[in-house]
Length: 559
Image 1 (cartoon, rainbow, N blue to C red):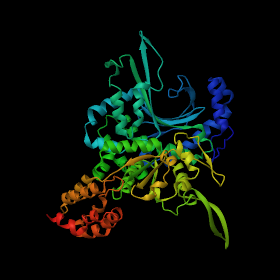
Image 2: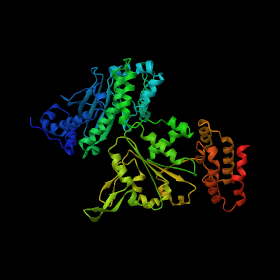
Image 3: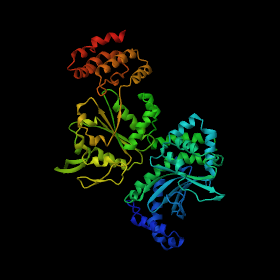
């Protein structure tokens, strides 16, 4: 047979999806035989080529436990995981578990998308859940390990089910019971996935009144790429996305295939060291709560707002730890994934050319030329396009720049981050959109008069997170450091200062005093940092200012 050339920069083309669309209209073996050469050229060989590149990117640890297959990889038939009740596509099996017919990774190429994920067969699905519930659910060490395995932000959960009415068995529902699993889009790690399944599906589904006539079959955890995302994508880029998915789903593969193996916890722990070299370490909200003093429920709400809106601003008076909080939230957002975070600081001289793109002088062969050079945000977005998971840009002091000028036509893209079809044409002629995995966190000092530059049009495009002085954090810090300092007396003074200020936007924060050597430094901090700030605020009320001079408050700290 004639050898098929697969272009490494564009393995799939419009012909690929047109062919699959025609096959969808005429799903028969005759159609496949007539168009076999086309299937080979536009579907099968490109998939094999991509999967070979996926294999190259897998760690040796994974390769030890899987059986990679390529022969007879194209099986035409009914797919259980499409939006329609009946849909036809090609199934491509990357690996099978060592236990036959139990768990396998499947690539499904349809006329409008590519779906790739891990299928756990019915014959092991309930055994896996039962063993997890009875053996590992209350094992603290096991739970902590599987919490470290984060799922892809774009994953979906499909569950095959069938039901009976009047003693007649009906067809399966490829997406599961929609009302039952509508809340299951929020799983962030392997532990959440297992717990959500157990909360929604009884181990013995027939024993529940709600599910008395429903029988659950295979489960499929997968990511989907729409055809427009794939067209023009290189083999390298597609293979990277699929390989990252394999690495993230491999712990579920181990749990489903070795569910009754006593060495399962050891293997999951061993793979964790491999996983953490591939992805950022998971950073739990509980850790942020301990450090910042904010409740996990509040932090969860903030994370939800950031993901829902796409961009947010943490605002508050000076010294409330806005940048510190932003960095911790960013660390959580990129945790367990292959994303990254970056930080820039706006200032009055910051421009559109610095942020998006602009002309820059370049010397080549002794000649001075001017070229359009991408700015920091454009560079970040181009880098984020190649990543599967969340990438975060922190903009410190966001209100210090002329935001309407710096953002320019970016305002159009910020208006509706859910609309992935939104593009703008830059001055360079390049089409640009903000990748769906990019998050923006700004910080805003509410005591800064330049806050007036943040107009209503921009405010509408951001979610705002207000923060205020958290005295409990100051107390916990000095208790934890076992500092020999009367922190409660200091807190009492700070409360009086803020009561006198009587404006939440100008309150005095606590970060000035988060130092291990506060006993030695307190006089310098108060006279050189606190008093200048208060002098500016109480410029027209010297009597009030005098109440909080160091000479007046130092004795209160020693009483």
